[in-house]
Length: 314
Image (cartoon, rainbow, N blue to C red; front, side, top):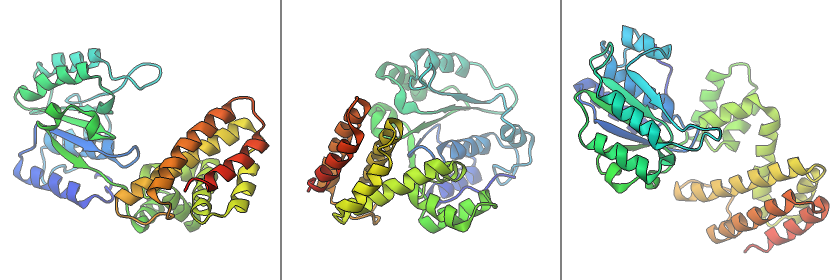
């Protein structure tokens, strides 16, 4: 059987409608931050398209079983390549185009899952566009991206876009309890809070306690900035100033925590209470501080100056 997919009831409802009618969009774009379940949902959607049982995906038929074991020849995954893993090359799109012209191996259809499609160049996207505009019979495309605005409008206009959101806090905590039954309740809640409901990230934090502590400290720093409490913020930053690598890691995570404040605002959710203008100034400041910390400066002095400057970002 398929593992429970947490949250995003609208997305699940759309999948159920398509599966019940056996009519699926030929191209679906799944948008959301890393860790919110885009690939999990994409695989489930692909299984629903290829499934022979009811209700689809049934989790029991030959196609579903093969997909669960990552062995189905008609569910094909493509994504960024290269050492950095940040380049979705036009050669990859050409492989997809050539493969799409070949009939399915076992199922009645073929499904192409293109991960991190926002990393495609305009050239790659234009090559893919021709295929999406006139897809071969029984060929479906599922693209994942962090931001739909990084895709060409011509592709967006020919696809069904579904946005996947992080979970509400309590639902994320419950999901962690079930996924990690041995984890203490306090750690589950802390991981869910630090990940702002992002279940994938929260599970990683539970498995990496040092990283969880870093997230907790960054979240606390954001609260102290919002409350204009310079002294405890300084004490916290000085704890990380003993090693350059740790100090830089803290600044990077602090910047991410401030970015999350902005995202929470646009999602209509309550954060630490840093005004948007102050948050924008903090992002610029933290980027400068990270560059300075990576140089051979005095970290204790830099931590002191950083706290004073963060208090002035109003």
